[in-house]
Image 1: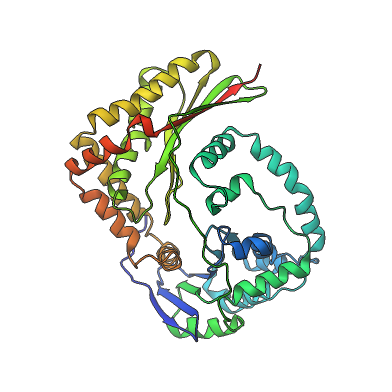
Image 2: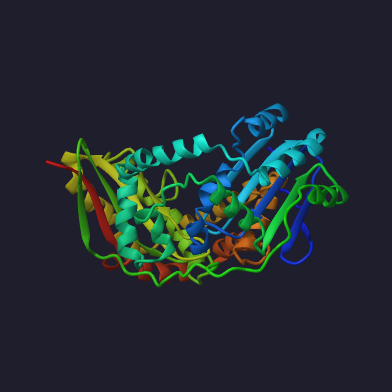
Length: 413
């Protein structure tokens, strides 16, 4: 196992609106190059232009030449769009630096998208979406989204307002080109190269000049609502089990409650011997799994306790699920549980710093989300150092059952 890196990312500006980030590490003959622009699925500007399709399709040309070059060089190339940014990431051998950068330049300037693939993607979308919407996880998430997010909130759009992919190649190329000109873009280099080489290769990428910031570049997040204690039973055909989601709004990473939430959530459902897992799996045999999930980030999201059981055992399992949260609310956690959760959170940060790519990615994400450098390390440290008494005060307030809502996915008659 590689030791956590102690090296820091350095950065500099290249003209208005562009930052280059750099981390040298020659322990392995590998280089990672990341291009990130500040536009994602939560931005109206990006949704109007279908940036997700535009960005993720740019490595596809009709002849497959770009993919063939990537295969020949063994370049690990990925293109993704998240809520706040679009990212191109490539990892390759140091000896292939020049050829790999030339390939990425051609991907980022590709004007001949594979139109047949775009049409196939558009036709397949309906069937893929229908398959997703039949899953129990989606149905629980959709119900929580409707309860917690106001109409028009970008956090709700992915649940009840999916965008059918565009097959208009010209429109998509224009969207990609516009995204590359957005101020706030970051180009990162990490691995076996020098700063001078990074500066040279940045120039060889051939990125367009940055333009003016357009309107619609700031998502309008609205205050979250309380979900309940309402109960929703959603019937689904051909089920033999009942699935539960018991949730409420959860604090953002920057919220003063975040440190206590991290500890309490880990205790409740964050590992195999959590409160939920012990009560519902190990002790009673109600289920094979019980856990918590959260959608929090730089903005608030939700936390949901999930489990499932055979249909005939649904009533008892629901009572046990509610009882675990109620007992946490009434009794709090122990010092032993607090210490174990703190150790986990600090250890997880160590695992996130084993490669130069991980360190660079963290730095870029902090920058894109408007967080201070070192935020994620500091976040874990805050959680690990919070006193037990403060956690107990948070637990008594946050885990009150009157603030939690239940979603059941049940077999239809």
